[in-house]
Structure formats: structure tokens, C-alpha cells
Image (cartoon, rainbow, N blue to C red; front, side):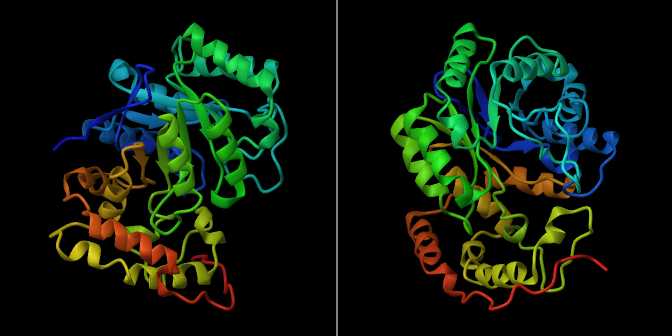
Length: 342
């Protein structure tokens, strides 16, 4: 079986069911990558059948995230779909402690939208944006009727083929996410969703199904836990954002994984990381899953997830039940130390 294409509503845009979010290799949040190293991973992904690449105008300096993808895929541009973002004021100062990710102020004005569009069209060397994402929008953006009318007009013109929000971490964006799904004519919805973090993702997916909104999923392995590679001794380099996590996150997460081992018992050779992707792809609203890809080894493993056996109804039901019981794990009383490699 090869990676399949899934549609973004009736926009004419389609995405590969396994996507590649360059957040991991273009921001400095997952360690340092040279441009050549990042390019090699992107090309490896394309060679394995991945044709959907997600980037941002706010990754790195001077549109680095966009030009990285543009240059890596220049000779196959007509065979790939590229998503990018807007919403941050890229002229504003970065906060102290900046580590490669966009944490500037938002600006949802017409002028900033137009500047962002022109910059992205230039950086991507294109005359239209395949998927344009509102980057971590808060409720002020959701209620800004003028902003949305501008987006509708750009879609009508064909300059933007499809658009939707890329929502921030889980519960902190639940109200914004549901408002967008229930009140705005969006084509897709990009969010964090995995077996360990099912809410508000499940609520988002249910709302999306009522409106035929395509779901794009990131962090399908709960920042690596569901890959099944961690041990109680796992620690991260200071350049990896997970070094800010505490011991309780790791220890409690590993206990939860024990409850999910049944998913690989009858799938010879399959990993928990692959099953985690297959679980998300079982939902017809899911258009694409973007695992965090840091190495060629991970890339090959995650792409092969499309070939493993589908989860049956009993397994899907058991996962839902376990989540409702918090996987039988009593949370640690103390957060513990940060997970920084000595």
C-alpha cells in the first residue's frame, strides 16, 4: 500500500495522509539542523511518497521555513502541496529567550495580512497558497469579521486555495477552535491530537464532521511518548524544547503506555508509533497526520504506518475507555526535575 491522497473539502487541494511539518527541522525547538540536513530529510520524505509539507512564515529568520521547503522541492513543485501561516507581526521584537520559534505579537490587520501574503508568495515562489493557516489565533481574531471577509475574498480570487486555523496547544485553545468550526467557513482545521491527548481534539473532530472540515493533525506521538522509545532515564539536549518538561510528564506517560501494549501484540513488526498514526487515520475526517520527524529512521517508520493492519472496533473502543480512565495512572504528586541532558 502506498500513501494515499485525501481531499481538503471541495477546494481541489489534496494532501498526503502522512505529512511533514518542518517545525522539527526549521525552528531550533528540536535541536539544530543545517540547511543541508533539513533539505535531505524533506527530499527523503518526498521519495517515500509524502507530498504534503507544512511550514510557516515565522519559522527562523527572513522566511527561512518557507525558502527551505521551496528550494528542497523546487524541481517537483507541481507534485506537492505546501501549507504556510500568517498572523504574527514579523516586524515586532522577539521576546527574551527566543529559541527559533515564533513568539512575537499577533497582528490581524489588513495591512499585515497583505504583507504576509506577498512575502509568502515570494518566499515560496508561487502565485497562490495551497493551504493558508491562521497561526495560533486567539478569540480576537475569531471575532474579527473584517479579517474573515478578507480571507473569503482571497479564496474567491484563487490567491489562497484553502484556509483554516492552526490552533495552539490543546485545552488552551478549545474555545477558539470550536468557535472557528461552528461559526466560520473554514476548509481545514490544524490541531494537536493523539491517544494520550484526546481532548479537545475529539470535540474538534466531531464539530468538523458536521461541516465537512478536513482535519490536519500534528504531535500524533505526544511529543515522542507514543513512539515507545523513551525510558525513565531519557533526557533531552537543552536545544530540544522537551528539556523543559518535568520528570512527572515522562514517568506518568510511560505508565500510560503500558496500558496500550495490546495494540502491537497481534501486529507483527508494528511499533506503537505506527499504531498511533493508524489510529488517527481511522477517522474519515483526518486528512493528514504530521508526525514529528527528526531522523531518516523515524521517517521510514512513520511512512510505513499506512501498511499496518487497521484497528478494529474493539480496539478503538478500548482506547476510548482507557482514555476516560486516564489509562489507570495516578498522576505524580510532584513535577520533578527538568528533563535536561547532563
